[in-house]
Amino acid sequence: MTLRPNLLGQIGLAIYQGATALITPLLPWHLKRRQNRGKEHPKRWREKLGQASKPRPEGQAIWINAVGLGEVMALRGLIAALQAARPELNFLVTSSTLASAETFEKNLPPRTLHQFLPLDTPLYTKRFLDHWQPNLALWSEQDIWPGIVTQAARRGIPQALINLRMAPASFRRKRMARLLFRALYQKFDLISAQDAQSAAAVSDLSQRQDIQIGGSLKPHCPPLAYKASAQQEFLEQVGQRPIWLAASCHAADEDIALQVQRQLVEEGGSQLLILAPRFPDRRDEILAKLADLPHAQRSQGEAPNAQTQVYLADTFSEMGLWYACSAHALIGGSFCDVEGHNPWEALQLGCAVMHGPRVANFAADYAALNAAQAARATPRAEDLYAALQAPAAHGLAGFERLQTQYRAKLNDLTDQLLERVRP
Image 1 (cartoon, rainbow, N blue to C red):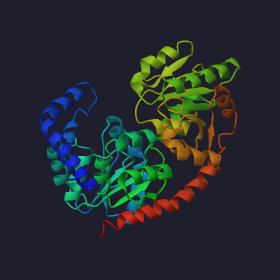
Image 2: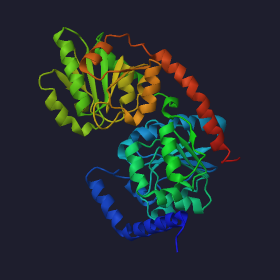
Image 3: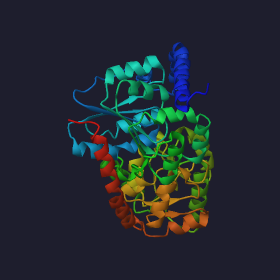
Image 4: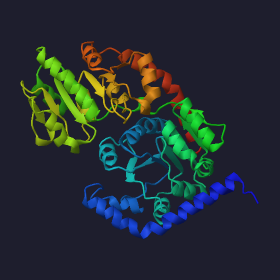
């Protein structure tokens, strides 16, 4: 007898849920070990066991999940659009990483709560869904958890997969378990991809022909929060010197930024470079690179002065401040296999965008920005040096035109989602 593909997928989901149930007794110990190493929230780590730390608000609630910092912060524009149409709605945002929780808590939209996503076992996800009882569940980008998606479907909770981005490597991995993913993707009422490549990939996996292309959510986000008093204080410390930023940088990004900064210094320039690493705990590695450059360190409470050439911004949740203080930003992850970080946050705070050659994670975004002359590719040190000589306002008009074009797609997505949360 030949089993139908859909039945095989359902069997795969059942096996997955059974396996996760078996490891459930070990997971509190695992989380506690991570908490002791500073990798989980010291007070909220039990949220990953499905134990809510806040009451459910009264009224209808939309639950939105995204995994990491960038994905979570991208949700703010969608939440604002949904709230504009239905001000009475409540929002629960879940994520998995400590950095995402800390930063999102400082940028919370109105009527919005944050919790950590529970580990994907039947016990923990049941606790979570029993408590929050969402009226609509949204999964953003590409990471979906089979167990809780299946449980939500059994409860009749409408679900949508939005802002989907699927890189070729991720597609190849998912194809190895394509029957399971076919069964999983069939549980979504709506799937909206960022670009044509992602739409084609999920269509192949799901065998669905109704995949939409809605573009990225990131252009619609409000600017990152920062304190105007902190900006004023920092600019007074720096004086009239030009400031440029290496944002969310990794080792390769820092190396080329420091190469250019040394050239600027040798030529008598007065520029100050802010290094804002993606992972501040790399500070010792970065400080070793700064031995020959006068520098100051944010985490030590040090302020820049007239001699400071590099300012190490090794703290969390202050990227809005650094964009607001800088004229130009080199967006990190674009000189290594990270394949780029979000360019929109810089533009939203009036900061000119530069990037390296490796931007696969934001390929569609950078293609649109470069075509509109709202961003500038700087694959070599000499390109980066030349870009720093251009007026900082270059590209902001193109950014504003792109925002207008993307607004229609956001409005269409908002309307479709609200149809599934009727008053």
